[in-house]
Image 1 (spheres, helix red, strand yellow):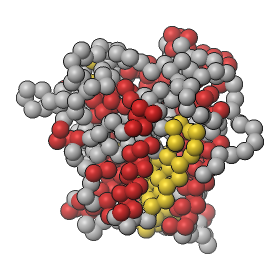
Image 2 (image 1 turned 90 degrees about the horizontal axis):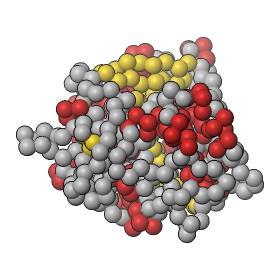
Image 3 (image 1 turned 180 degrees about the vertical axis):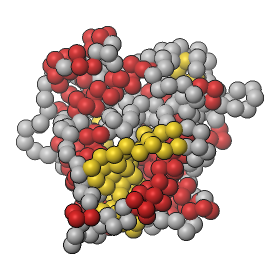
Image 4 (image 1 turned 120 degrees about the vertical axis):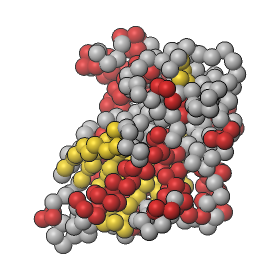
Length: 421
């Protein structure tokens, strides 16, 4: 697929982020802004051998150099929140936006979902088809990102696809390791099909048009949830997703050594070191008592500061520290679990029509290609679009990437054809 022609809509983001930094001073330490390079040249951690679009270069240049060793988790999360607002595009109006509190499957932990309705009231629907529903899981490695950071994106998805969107603020690592995020997605799916569609808005929402969608780690959650819904007995008679949209999904935590991890190792803000740090936090090592090393930190708030790195080859992320050692070893049984490494599932034939959107200059591109190949081998109706010279994260950078608008249009067309919207 070709990139858009004509002048790039990129802005002088370095000037903007400094001009408006005072708005977020209480969330972003001044030190972070001093480390953000000017967007007129590539960041120091970016490879000069890979050809990138100007949008990719500018987006990469905005990010501080990826951390090595100790990680200030609170500052990292605050940076992601700010960056998402900076490059995510204007906030589109909705017919209604509502936050709904939910609890985890075991009832012990609260989280929430945000519902977006491009149209809502019954009088709006006279003579029209009912709305489909997209259950969206955000990216961020399971450690960063939120419903708030994806607000403008979800509004744009709802408007362009003309569907309701339910965005899930699932629990993050390292405070809440596997399977907390996946279980929250399952609880959110139960809410969508049993409450939102069947009870709250039966005249507005169509139970036959439920879609799973997510980017990066959120793509992993969407794919894992799809397989879990087919596997668990309680969903045998339940509404099933009719389509799946996966944006540069993480589908292989078993083998984080695909060639693209080396080829695109230093192309963007997403480095192999960061990916392994995310894996360590999601799949922590076990203590001597057989419990995960992060389980004791599950009650901590999201703003905790995690510091320190392991000097051993089996690094982990827990209450004492977050390490991004590339030689980290993860729990063997979890790495092999299809809920974690969807690429190796023996039930990929259960996938509905699926759209996979990939960035060519992304460490995750190889596993994305292999995943699509496996889906095709299982006779799944799958469409794969690869955007050349583009980096990981482009879909959420609407103000920097013309390809983000192209990918959103591709998504809308795919759902319109598949769901007959």
